[in-house]
Image 1 (tube, rainbow, N blue to C red):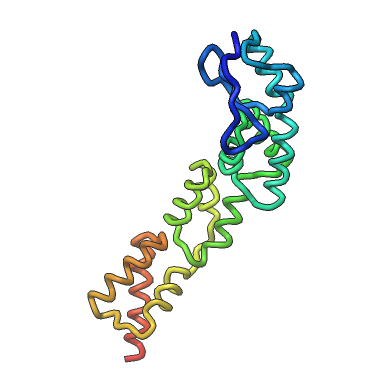
Image 2 (image 1 turned 90 degrees about the vertical axis):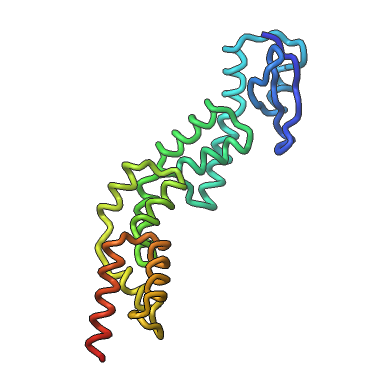
Length: 206
């Protein structure tokens, strides 16, 4: 295989794109290119190039990952996306993410449990499930953690706050309240129960 082009990456001037036989192959650090005397016209095997890229990038990618997780609490998908954005290839990204999992720096199950604990008072299961799926948490992890979610009166509490000063017997307001609770991710069973509870309280004070 022959290197046919080496171009600077637009988002990271410390890295370049390598093209082999006229096709993009991978991104690699400029230092690795210089140290290994890679230039247009260089003949190199895929095995040699893959090892060169892996050896030059693995420590730097892991250092970046450590810096990132020290500032944020990412899911595996979020960290994966960030590493790809930095220009690292598939092998390096998988190696780095797996290493972070091994050392406990990222844990999708813990992330899901923490997210549920922080949001269960203001969001329903459907909304929480949607949010976690958007962050790349596997469906089986989400379902397992939602099973542990304690039953509470958050839907009723939110409905009570929203309905303060409003007439629950007004069909237009009732529809508005239902839409609000649906947006928060509550299931119809929870919504209908909340409205029924509030109406009973209102009836008691009539």
